[in-house]
Each structure stands twice: as structure tokens, then as C-alpha cells.
Image 1 (cartoon, rainbow, N blue to C red):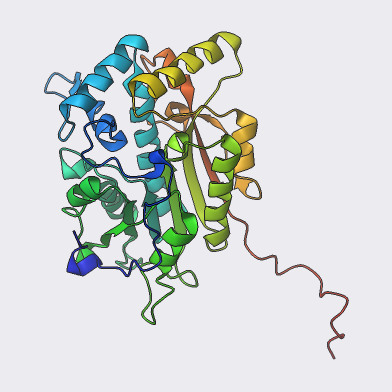
Image 2: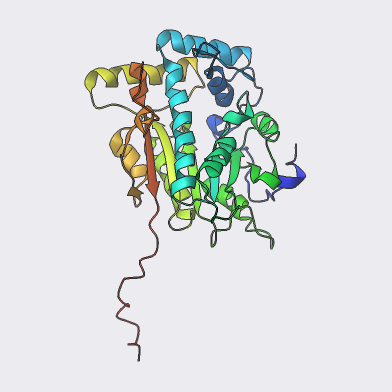
Length: 337
């Protein structure tokens, strides 16, 4: 399926899936695999009229629903891990648009739309803009670019595409940063891409994507570093990753969660220590509060009824440094008259 006319992008830079490891090939509708995007959909919740959390599942197939039940049975509250990651991304996007002037948000590994579009990230961004705009400000809106490489997930995401509203959907692999950014910058064509590195203030959201990279954490760190290398100066990176807590008891339970994901879930899913997460974001400026549980990143109020597994995922917001114009002239340059 090709992108809609409003979001059609040249995809000549993208590599084929041939020769890639199994975990990097899209799951699609393969009945022998658990599609991660559909598994996360199986864990979604909403509030009913009594203000109680109830399942809010729209797309998940039977095998993903069964996998979610198995994970919850083995690790109570497992779904909270993924819901807290999504909530972190929503809060981060709102903050970056309202307080940091971000004009382009790239959501890599976007996953499936919500059952109600008002809960999708681009809708949250639009409400934030409406709330924070003063009469002197322009009506410019931040672009939201959803990036996915699973054809089935893309088919659902494209129902959200609306170029007039600054919402775009792009077929690219977040685990192949150079191909992804070549696509977004449209470097093979004379016409500009969706991201203009010389003009846009960019934020990249990697929500849980790197946790399911099937390589070592050092290889996953290199993928993040490659993303950072292609981001413009002063760009932001918001990332979540499954965390191995320092406390021995929590670490043991987190390892059980990791094993459950690999045996009962999508077949991948790796914990990272704080040191390994620091290696992923090396060379950037880590914003407060640093590396911590996703649910604790500037929530709307004090966290309540947080399960133990809420400590099994870390969230970070970091910024790529800009050029330092205050540095002295290099000594090999002639002195200015």
C-alpha cells in the first residue's frame, strides 16, 4: 500500500527486509509471531462513566490478546509498563511544544491509533497549542510525523494522515536510522522532505522501540547514537527503555518480566541498566529529572496505585547540543583585521 497523496514520500533509501534478522522484519499478520503494536493495543485502558479503568482495545487479534493475558498472569500489572511509556510520550510532546518551541515531532515506532482520535499524540499536541497560544503568537502548528515499518500498522496509521493539519505518516524503519532520516529529509530528491533540518526545531520520540531491538544493548546504543548524529543541533530526544532496577529484589522481578516477554510475548524485549541507557544518549544534555521511571516524569499529580512493574521502564528527555559560537578562533586561521 502506498502512502496517501498528502503524505507521499520517496522511499528509495529504504532497504528491503531481505537479509535482516527475524526480529527486524515486520510481523504483519504472521500468525506465528506476536505483533508488538497489537500487543500494546491489547493492554490499552480507558475510563468509564464511573471513572474506573476498563479495557479499551481496538485492533488486537486473538493471539496478541492471549499473549497479554499470559503476561499479566505471570507479571501482575504488566500492561502498566507500556501504558506509562505512552503517557510519558504524551506529556513530553505537550511540554516540548508548549515550552521549548518544537515545530516537528517525529514519533518513531508509532504503533496503532487509539480507539478515539482525541487520545492520539497529534490531538494532544493540538490541544496544548490551543491552550498555550497567546494573541500575539502566530497560528503555526507543530507537525507530527508518525513513522512505522509494519505494513498492517501503517494501514491503520494512514487513517490519521492529514497534511492540512500537519499530521503525516511515513514508511521507514526506526532501527535503520540513516535510511529513516534520508526518507524524512528526502535527500534523494530536489524537493524538500517533511523535516527541514535548517529550519525545524525537531524532537524525536523513541517510545519503547529500543527495548525490542533484538541485538545487544551496545548495538541498540549505536542505533540511538546514529539517530542523534542525524538530528539537527538543539533537537530533543525523548526515549523510554525497559530498565533493570538497582534494587536486587526489583531487579530479579524485572528479569522475570524480560523472560516473560521473550517466551510469551513478541520474542524480544531486553532490560538495560542506567549505565547502558547513558551510553545510548552519550553526548547529549540530560534534562531533569534525569533517568527515572516513566510514570514519575512530571505526572499531572501524585502517582497512585502504581504496580511494582512500573519501575521496570525508564524515561529520559535529552537535548543535542548546539554549535558553540563562543569558542575562540582556531589557531590555524589568520587573525582578523
